[in-house]
Length: 310
Ligand SMILES: C=C(C)C(=O)SCCNC(=O)CCNC(=O)[C@H](O)C(C)(C)COP(=O)(O)OP(=O)(O)OC[C@H]1O[C@@H](n2cnc3c(N)ncnc32)[C@H](O)[C@@H]1OP(=O)(O)O
Image 1 (tube, rainbow, N blue to C red):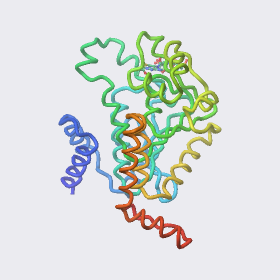
Image 2: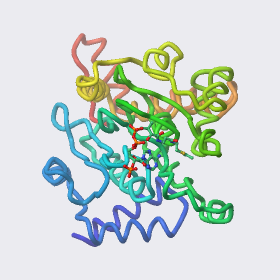
Image 3: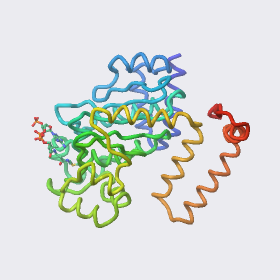
Image 4: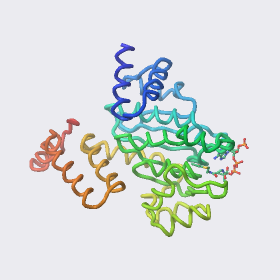
């Protein structure tokens, strides 16, 4: 059983992270000290404070446990994104991505801080070679390869790497007191995990430039007006709203949702002509699924579709 579980995770790892043996070794290491969850076990173990992870809490919420909830949990450092936290986050997301009951994942922090950025104490004495040869921050990209929709529920500070992690998610909801910023300039560096790129695509050059070269943060209202976040909520309602959004996504076919996500995200990576072709191919691809037939048949028969994620 343990062997099967280990093989399954390594196979999953190969699909999601075609890179390194080192990752597979990590996966192996993790699996030796952490039980690989079946769905029921995920619910039980995660709900009970996730002893497997040091810096994140992972659980399943929403109707039938269809929404994964991952909470960054390093309160003393305002969820500063140290290496260990990012490893925990990656594995928690991978576990939920692999869970067939989970339709969407919510990523949140505390009311004071979603995350105050990469861990400054950890990088303070790094040199160029440490960063370059060690691929500093490169592992963060794993977050962008999660195939299910990830909703960031941002309360408090989302600064530097915190803002970048939020932008790696598919949808950002903000609490009224959220603050988004790229303050790296004030500590003698620049954003290194997508801040100059994703922020520019999200809010335009002039605004992104201003944020990156002044270091000044913006509040939730501004983030909403500028299109960085899709909606703003009372801080104590934010996570519930994000879970409700995850449940709404869960009404649809998971495979089709994942295709829609891939297609929207493609627009970040490519020219319009290539993006349109990519969309068209995936659109045609939906016609190879049972869920397309079911969705259209249900409409014609005036009933709710019964999607089987196939
Ligand atoms: C990807 C890259 C390159 C990056 O992300 S670079 C980092 C970008 N982020 C930043 O520059 C933000 C740094 N943090 C801050 O400016 C302030 O902590 C805030 C967020 C404005 C909050 O201020 P305060 O409420 O006064 O809390 P403050 O006392 O500073 O922080 C509480 C604790 O968290 C620690 N902390 C906060 N942000 C941290 C960070 N990014 N890295 C490491 N520790 C951090 C801080 O050192 C303090 O710990 P200690 O009590 O041991 O001294």
